[in-house]
Image (cartoon, rainbow, N blue to C red; front, side, top):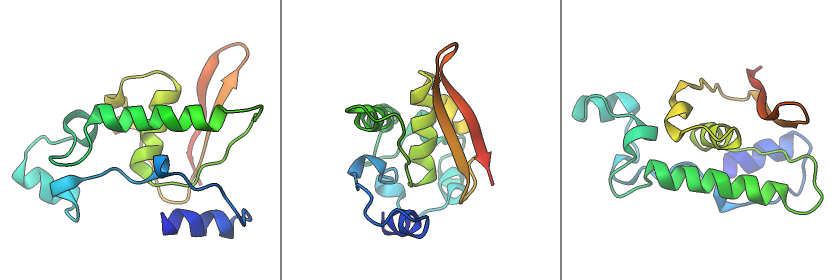
Length: 133
């Protein structure tokens, strides 16, 4: 969270609202391991399908993403900006369009990219821009 907070400050947001909803996924017993290391021990493992032992399940990740969307929509706000970790941002994107959490595995997300989720009058909730540098 410190990196996300610092990034927000560097982008000009001196006092952003901090929420635990944007924390990185809890990897439980997989914490500190690379995806390659996890897959060596658990072939075919996928975060959004299998979750993490003693960590978050895909359903918990999705519920947290939905809770962030609800938080961002409170009041009369029309715009919210989130600085966070990649896995939760991918989950927020699929929750935004009401897709299954497993769809998040198909969203490439690089560091320091811009992503726009929009609620369009004609189409409803859409991913208007993804992974733009």
